[in-house]
Length: 183
Ligand code: PRP
Image (cartoon, rainbow, N blue to C red; front, side, top):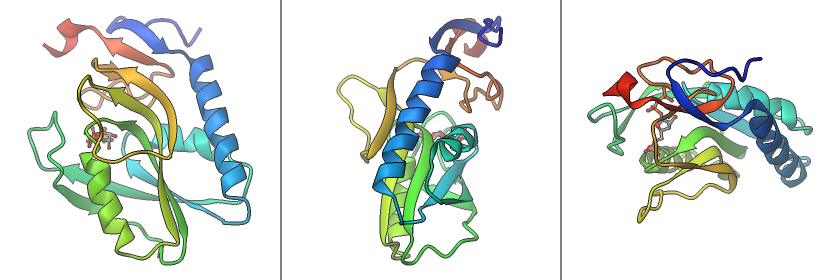
C-alpha cells in the first residue's frame, strides 16, 4: 500500500522491496568487513539519514553513528565542491574506522571534500557507502564508493531521503519526479 504512487511521481525506480534487498546486502558486506572494528557510521545530513537508519539495522557488528551537516556553495542545484560545515561531528575519529553513509553520489564533489577533511583527522580507515550512484554518461564521480547499493539514472529522483525543495524525503520508494513539478 505504501508503494502507491504519489501524484507528483512519474514512475518508481526502486520499490520498498528493492531498497530492502540493497540495504540488506550492504549491511551484510559491512558486517563481514568490520568484524571487531567498531566502525563509526558518519551520516551526511540531511538526505542520508533515512538510509543510515536502515543500514545500521542491517549491520550485525557493533557500530556507532554520528552526523555532519554541510552546505554546498553554489547555485543550489549543483555541487560546487566547496562545502561549509554547518554541523561537525561530536566524535573524535582519530584511530577509528569511519564509513561515510550517503544517499546519492552524483558529481562526488561533496564527498571528495569531506574525505579530505576527515582524513586530516587521522582515522584508521575511511570508506564510502553510497546507497546510490547516479549514472551520468561520460562523467565519473570525483570519489569512488567502496560499497555501492545501486546505480540510478540521471533523472530528477526523489524519495528515500532524496528531496526536491525539501519535499518527498518521506516517500518509502525512489521515484522520478514529474517534470511539471520542478519546471
Ligand atoms: C545531496 C546528497 C549528497 C550530494 C551529492 O545532498 O545527499 O550529499 O547532494 O552530490 P554530489 O555528489 O554532486 O556532491 P544535498 O546537497 O542535496 O543536501 P541534502 O542531503 O540535505 O538533500
